[in-house]
Image (cartoon, rainbow, N blue to C red):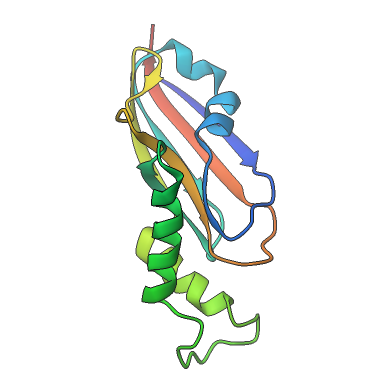
Length: 141
């Protein structure tokens, strides 16, 4: 059983949901040698989140962002407001979607479904670059 860990600094993203499957794969060339294993993806932030969702129709990601805005609107009377109007709604959205994912790996590939991709959901309008920690565990070929 082998373990690999990488930290990836993602580019700065605008508010919305953005596919990050490719930068994750690029950071872990060892994945190609994994016979069977598990990739854990952890986002080190509290105002963004991770999601596995459709990667074929970009309207899905636009609608997801709009639905999250409806669930956690900026106009709600939050107490935590010192970091801007979009900060507390971002924390709510992050709590709903979560900051980590686990993806099975076999035969050197992520076992995502045909239309699935890994997405960073950026909930702030002026966010910093985000960091993800990738931990790959697996039996090597």
